[in-house]
Length: 553
Image (tube, rainbow, N blue to C red):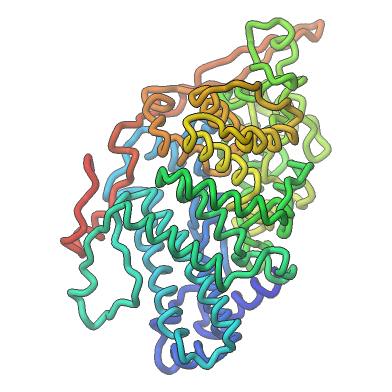
């Protein structure tokens, strides 16, 4: 991990003197492509730069000499799930409240715009592939691996493009800037993009990438065979190719290397190398860092910066009782102690009223205007995010965008298990006869202290349980944002909705009253048919007349 970050930082300084660079277009007096791709160290540094485009779902990250980098989250201060039913931000200037929730996303303003960024890295990959083909002077095993890694990143970029925009241009070869007409490419069909993604990830899993068990600690953050299989399994869910998705996920499970971490809380505070994590983005808080702790910590613990995204009552109520029954406010025992006897992931993911965090009892749901330290408790829902937050981080490290070093877990085993269960249910029109779908769900639920699913579920009932399990297991990791879209449920779940929070009052005897309230201080959510795809940036359309806009924009 340290080697990766240090080499990346050194490359920025040595080759450019700044953080903004493109090796494939470097000034001739600095370094040439021919020099880079004849040297393993420089080629690997170029590859690390390509890895730098992989997403950081925390919202923002930093690298030396570069201002705040948006690498996959919603914008500056929000998680991707901030515009779903899981989270609400108290800040009206937040991108979720300002654009995504009211449905005002447009070709001229989209806080989730990634078109230029994704095609920038695709060009870098194509450049590497063009200069490391047959006849390269590089060691053969090194050459095959770095090419496979580059293709992994390119496949991820195309997956991200197709799920956002639908049809997109498929560019597999290095384009010639001296031929402007060749740059005016049209959009290729969605099916062709998914064909490409599947083929690329399948091929590099067979040749080029190592198994995860063969990789050393210094190689954290690089792609493995398991990462290629897992990404392919995810992408094929979006494509509706159930057989291929199930087969890819099965390859990850059969490899046997990655295992669920029994300590869910420790998993999300890890900084690289957790056995559950299949692909992650590595940070050290110095050469490369992010701002999750500053943005989501309770404000009384981070000098007033935090609580930029707060969990909703809808999410809190989704966590089952430990016996597997739904939580029910009409049940007197449930209502008297609503945070007791619940799915363990509730307290692991969310700071509720009375949670102990960083040695302090947090009284979130009282919505106290002043906690005695002169710092506002800024939760607008009665809850705070706990997942991702580093409880060992000194307070002074919370100020600034680059002080956090927990890794971003882009792919982990629990997701693969849920992908596998869903694909099998879709493939067979119900849970598979061999019981593999049930077993995958059992493994995820067992860690949370929950019983296995009841036998005899049909297709619809099992899918409902998959939807529920993904909602709580993968909360705040960005999956809900995309799941609601691929299931075509976003209109019914989100449109014309306010979501809710919790206030608590306590009488002189200590009896608490729980009051669910509507969060109407932020816009009512708008999600229309057109919002299943994002608008293509107007500037891109004006540059290329062959790019037709998406419907409704």
